[in-house]
Length: 183
Image (cartoon, rainbow, N blue to C red; front, side):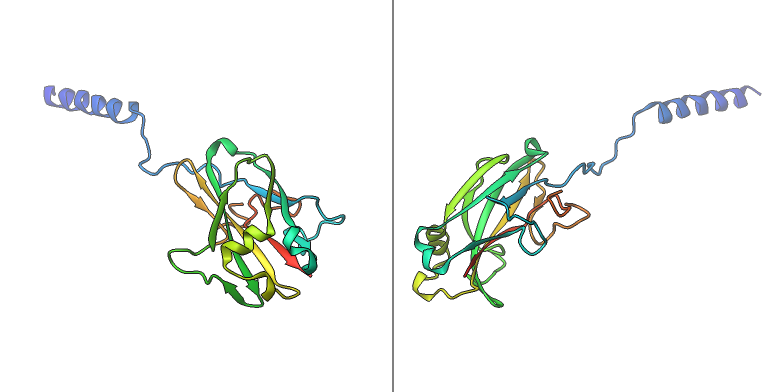
């Protein structure tokens, strides 16, 4: 009988110790993805899926043109940085070509205002790609890709952002790229 009482008492102590302690998961909770939206400034009159990420520039005005855009973020305090990378796109040919060491293109700048306005000259973008103005053609694109790094180390880009992770006028919370379309 004494052994039964001792065993019951020890069992009760173990149950209190086990259930009374706070259990923490070794896996960190992932709250949100990167909320970063970049929109052409000014926005097209009628925003569509085809034009929400396109800034049209006349081919004859490339030398003096700028890529102007507005940025918005609902969780800017959680974002460490947003970097802008550039490449030139003609059909399916991308210059510089993506590599494992530079999958997004060439780094242009870090975005300074996550809720503000940014402007980059088209000449600067072209200089970064190494593509000469004289070689430009109608329908070429100068593509700027955004890569957001969260303070917890997670990285969001065109490679891993999607509806499940990533709300702009068309319903996503992450803008992976903006294009300067030359016409």
